Length: 493
Image (cartoon, rainbow, N blue to C red):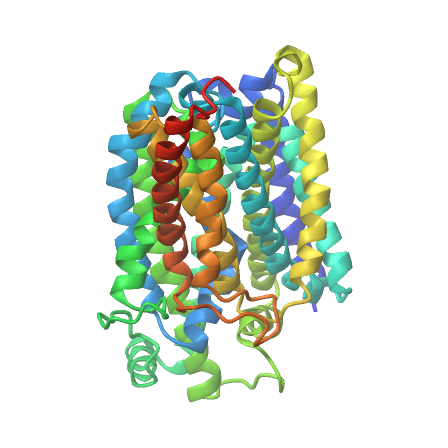
């Protein structure tokens, strides 16, 4: 359990975070300040904030659990990430910066219609709400162990803390605390590796034993669409997934718009990918080191029935010394708050800009509405986390599965807005639903019991956005031909 000194470290950590939040909250005079930091934030801080938002506490717990249970082949996802930043820099960022939009989905209205914008915002909100459940559940496992309380109470405390910080801080506070949290987050991962290496007998011995156990395997070029652990799935197919997240997710677009210009927005995007590669290397290595520590060298014993998701929390709570476990516990919860703050801010921004009447978006009224929706979305996210807590599926893969559900149709909507704005709005609108339905032919649904649904051809989650994107594009063009022939295009809705 946590000692007095562990709690002192946690208290100091969050006192510093709160101080940063109070400092920057004084600059929130209107909705632009609250959501975009006045549009003049430094690109490196924005880049760190982007990766801090992406990795989350699910990365802290999920990546080690994944390599502990299998290997490091998910490092190949970085091939898709690197390819995606060139597409984002050439296609998405210049258009967003030149359009004068406040929400990514506002762009769709300028090209198609208000209903298309509303649909896209709705799909995004559903996707982000599902992700919120995973982001809350991961660190709640740590808080549960720290306080020895039920998981429901732990989720409630995490939700309350993240809601309060976002409510008062705004995007400036979120970005600058992201910088602090990311530094401690990375340092914590390196610290766990160092502690394991010391117990095992040196880095060379740790690497040798991990390699013999297959934990350092990271490359696989075999063709198997049903597995996410090969170059075709994690490299090629994942490009669509990464472009959809980096190009269509309001969390990312909000940060692109918070920099001074398009060039600095690109710098922030590139830096976030480079930092993301470092994150993957560190935290997959944590899982490999833990495997050698517990399962090969037997430096310490795990309780019977410990799942891969629970190995790192056990290590932190029972192996690390006083003070250090407090720092790592604070780092996990802090990184969770970072991701959740960004998520609530993006959901609030989307709600105010894409769903509320225009008269409710300006000045003090807009700021008040944004803060109210931070509260509402935070409460809903807490409910989603309770649902997630009922599942014992791998944390990382479950999070990525739910993230992949809505991203393909969203990406298709933006590609059509960029390159095919003359398509009939009604065809575009209906195609998004058709694109999502195409997924039913290919995917398993994690929360359903085995055998409840059998796909026609099973593919890994990395293919979901590519399949649904292509399905959406094909259906949109087919419906466009039909509507134009019948004069029912929906233009002007």
